[in-house]
Length: 80
Image (cartoon, rainbow, N blue to C red; front, side):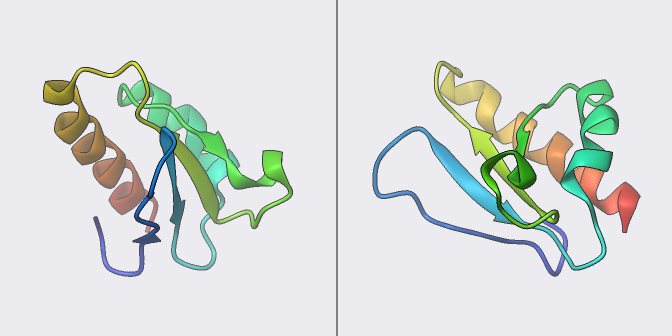
């Protein structure tokens, strides 16, 4: 992930939260992320900050997780 991005380490469940650098809006970035082959739910949908997102890894084959994270990281870098 690019500098300034932080995330939690889930102890259970099937999703994690990412916090983007200040000034980025996860909702505005979503369309671009989808074009890059990755999707998430913006944090604002859960009354969270606009620079947060919820990233699910349920029902995703293990071999697809790392490439998906790389595509998300690329999307974030393109918006910095």
